[in-house]
Every structure is written in structure tokens, then in C-alpha cells.
Length: 443
Image: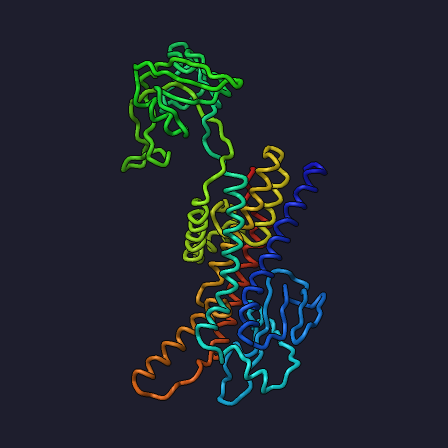
């Protein structure tokens, strides 16, 4: 790799790393802001974990940066109810590693004040708002970033500009690109269509998408069709007669149809022999939420099939199997892909920038979904405990029993440590795989 390529690679990694750090900080702010509004005692707001690099105390809260910027936490009083009635709540945080790392929240208030301003004393709806604040922040970030990519940069799409013109007609089922003497001349070339022509109308119908162009052509074998193109700023009228040819059948989304045996479906339709050029096309605002939702569904599928995928990753890391390009990645793998995108010179600068923003959007979707998994110490685990507590109290009330009090989620700490250990082990395996057998986008 050239020196400038190395510099761009490093820039790509740093951009995504900085974006991830900001995303983590905003995630924790999503917890911090409502907790502060609801009066919860907050002793620390930290980005990262491990030794503290820098911190400053303002009011009752210490704000700082830790040595390993792969997480963060807000130290709220009483996230877990006391094990025994009347006992002081144990210190805990919103952080992923606080239980495993023994994080202790420093306090400047009296024990009584800390207890009265504890998280577990809040009404259930307020606790859920606080715990949802982090993931919702990541969702908002993802929506904003997807909006920037789709509305600002656009996505590569088939355009109305002719990108290629075939010299002859080759059956779709034949695996060759060169013309043979017996091949008929392609109608597009015979009609004078040139690469760079922008199609305005076909058969007297104004067109605004390439699929409509191909649809009219495929429906018109043997019939002369009027074609108007824009060439060098001027309208040029042409006449083309599509030739009946063997082509693959497509569905409404442009995908090749296959039969029950998995073979491509072939049909005889009109063929001209022109191909569209790929251009970035800005999308409508209505495309943003569906794009985010598709990403959410994709992340959910990865999480649901994570055990199977981790086995595949282990086999690829320890053996010779290829990595699944749609499989899970560690921060190392994400950083590597970001570096590759930033350094590849076959992509325009705007495409590289859009791709890096897209990576950050996907990372925030992953943080949103992952943190909602109903296992402690994740945000979803705290929400699940709160919902269980609320349901239990309602049942007791319906049965005429006295309030059972808050659920002692501290009993789940051993399970929490197991979850942390398992997820930590998977993270290390993914990091190792991303080093020895990485997923490559460009060969």
C-alpha cells in the first residue's frame, strides 16, 4: 500500500473510532439526562473503562475519560435495590463492564441522601425512560446519519444514462461476452444509441426510471419504437426495433426469478442491447425509516443466530474457511473496513465519505438493538427487571396482598457475570478473527 493509501487508511479508522466514541458518549447522555431530571444521584459520567485518564468534578458528578474508549457508564445510586430492607443500596452503573471490573461509584452526599435519590425508588415508568434513553439516542443518531447518506449523498442506482451499448445479441444463457459472426447485430448500436445518452422518452412515453425503459423494450419485440435521448445538451430522436431474444425474467424489484430447482427463469422478450450507468441518486425522506428498519431487522437476525455464527467465525479463525461477509464483526473488523473504504482509489471521495457515515449509522443501529437484549447488565436487562417488578406488584395488589417491594436484581449478578464473560469471550474471538482472517471488501 502506498504512503498516501496508508494515511487514508488511518484516517478512515480514526473517523469511525471518533464517531463511535461520540455515539457512546451520546448513549450515556441519553441515560444521564432523564436521570438528572428525575433527581437520581449521579456520582460519575465516564466514557470508556479502565484507568481514568482525565476527570473533573462539577457539582456532585465526576465527568471523565477512561483509558479504553470502548464503552461508558453513568454511575447512578441504587440501580440495584438493597438485598435487605433498610440496607444501603450497592453502587452500580449503566456500564457493561462495571460488574466484571468492580467499578465503585464515589459519592459526596450522605448515605441517607443517596438512598432517597436512588434509581430503584423511582416509579417504574421513569426507570424505563432512563434505561431506554441510551438506546433511543443511538436510534436517533442512526436516523440522522441515514438521512445524511440517503438525502444528501444518495445511493448508487440505475440511472437513465446509457452506460454501455452491445455490438451484438448474445443469449443470456451463454457465458460469453465476445461476439461471433453468426450473432445478430444489437438493435441499440444499429439505431445509433451511444454511451452517455440520457433517455428522455421511449415509445412516446416520458420515463423517469430505467426499469420503465427496459419494461417498454421487453414488451416491444419486432415493433419499431421511437426513442428520444439527450446528447451533449440537445434532444436527439432515434428509432429502434427491439429484437426477440432469450433473456432472464425479473421480479418487481429487479431480481432474477428462479424456478423451484433454483435455476434462472428464461423468457423471450424484446432486446435492444443497452445498459444503464450507475449514478448516486438522492432518495426521498420517506426512504429513511425503512432503511433504518431493514438494518434493525438485519442486526436482530445476527443476534438470534449468534451462536451458530460464532461457531463459523471460530472455524474461519482457526481453520481455512472463508469468513461470512454478512457475519458479525468486532471493532477491529469495523475499523479495518473503514480503513479500506477510505484508502481505495477506485471510489470517488463523496462515495467514501458516504460509506463511512453509513458505517457509523449501522454501528448505532447495532448499539440500539444490542442494548435492548433483556439480559443484565444491558439496558434491556434493567427494563426487563422493572417490568417484572411492576407485574409482580400488580398481581399482589389484585390478590389483596401487601406490596412485595422492589425486586432484588442483585441476585442476578452471578448470571450477569456469566453474560459479561460470554460476550467478552465472543468479542475477543471476533477481534482475533478480524486480525488473522478478516473480511475484505476489495479482495
